[in-house]
Image (cartoon, rainbow, N blue to C red; front, side, top):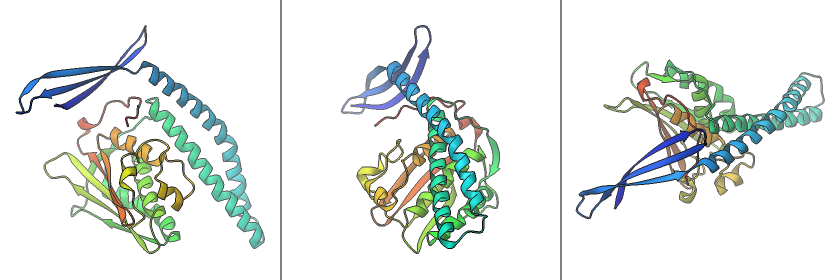
Length: 292
């Protein structure tokens, strides 16, 4: 039996090599250690392909963002004009479609930065309770439009300090809350709660909804790029499946982990952890190669 794997990545220049070395214990049927096995995987070509693809996405997204920003400004200007009801309906529809396109382009740019190891973080100590409270206020209108009630289950303490990048972490939390609202049911609920993990330098945050749930065969692939469960596509047509991938990378870069528990047609709960000790936060963000 091979168990207890450890993974290490190494890069070399001139000539260029990128290697992943996996070390695993070899255990016999009695549980005794027989030795170790090392597997060396040459990832040079796949990382080069990944870099080339990321560069193409980044260039294309940058080219799209400029005209989309102009269109967004134009639609927003028209909403202030004295228009008929029918004309205003067309303008609002165009504004909403353009906002979705801008969000998609921004997600593509974030993914390109993640895969190139350029998704830079600026860490500082923040109060997680007030931080999440502010995000919930920002999400109130979206929840109201979807007829979903938001709840915040706070810990007993008044403050709970963590080390985080406020902007990046707000993207992660907003992504989870947006999904909890979009994939919910009418008169549904979305509940976010914070728990200090006993005897560990971590805080756990959960986002629970009463929505459509996730099929078990889809749950394991939710955090990969461009993947959306079939029932999610039917419920909400727009979206390209990048939000949870970005969220995962943000959480990992904070020294935490993320996972989901779900029951089809009964709702989902997404959990993630954050380190309260800055020494547990990775010192750099390496390029991501997805494993299936």
